[in-house]
Length: 368
Image 1 (cartoon, rainbow, N blue to C red):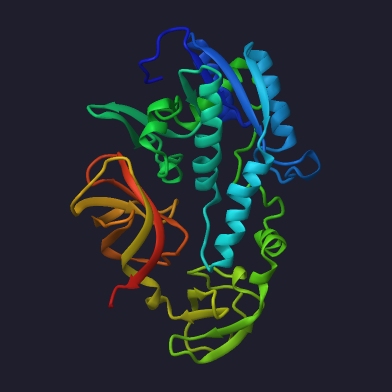
Image 2: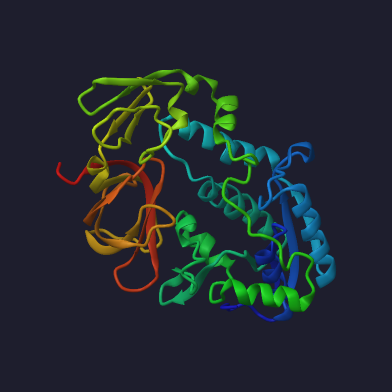
């Protein structure tokens, strides 16, 4: 583990019950640190997710407890239900109600794990907090740097763009230079109960995969019906609520008889309108961001590689910092389906360092 910590230092390991965080705790123990495992209870026991691959459910707490016992480390379960509900689940529903596409995993890291839990770790006298994220923390000339994982297929740096410098200085990521096969091999060698446990899947609080059920319960006002229109405002059909759609969607529009396939281009929450058009209209070359977090502060336009979706490869762009936490991104080549509410993350033009990132407010078509 890259670290300046002294042998025997107290380190908190965030243990979700999955194999990654369990191996993280095991590696810390092997390296001679005093490890305290902490698991967050994010749901009432009667409402814990039952979907295979969900995380932070009741069974996961039990798995974390068993792993901690097998490693001989202290373990605590903290009730974070109210914080999680307010900071992640409610934000998820509110974002959809605004006609945007949320990323709850970013909010969970930003508002819960790397904020509230990190504070708890400090209160316990820990010198650092470690997680099972696949990212790398590198000691640079000006402090800790966040880098993409060595295993590109597992890299989670996109989801950690909102990490502050102060948080990064305190955090550790022991799995950043490893691949998943090695992690599972270590778990199997140690006989951990979750060595073969399936990976957790996104949106852990939507056990049936129907996110609209969550949105409709928290924001029933967002389910009002409206019109589906083309770029000229011509009404093509009706819908039951904008929360059923996202930018780039083609299926489920309920439209037929068109000369070419139609895609969702924009969601107008104020007027409850879904704007559709041809695939060519999905391409954008300019992105406007708000809420930008800088891990390498910039005061002038700079060349970078950016990701506008977690599963897309980074592409060449020029990023211009603006006032009040905003930025403008000019893509070297247009990208499709850039959705407000998602994140745009900046990486060094050469290399793997995360320079910062922000929330997508709007994008402009390549031809605009």
